[in-house]
Length: 146
Image (cartoon, rainbow, N blue to C red; front, top):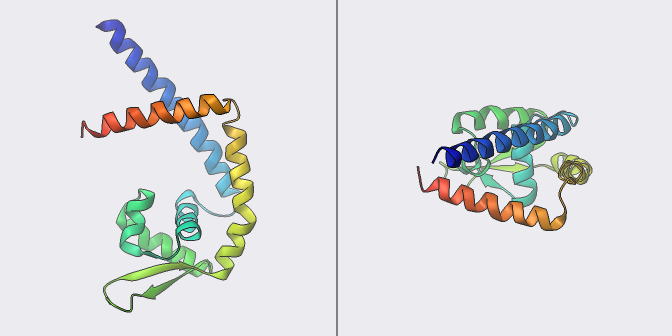
């Protein structure tokens, strides 16, 4: 039993360290574009998925709803997004990426994608698929423990 726990602990430590290192590198890349990771995540969501209700953005990019207003304010000040009221329900406000925001992402996203490819290049495509499968399996199991 103790060996099993030791192996679980080792997996947790290795996974945590790898995640921290990868996240640090990705955050450095994002900051090189003059954005913080949360601003980048909001713009990326709007760029790829279109207009989103402010209330749903936090759920989709996993940040607290209280932070959304602050981030949206900053992105709006920079001219990267606008707020648009819902025509059918005035309680709902949509965030929409502006042309300036699209131009920024057209320019930076291919570089960002290349940086991520560089970061995970230590694994072959087969190993990446295996890692995706195993990490999903682990995440699904852990989710059931909540």
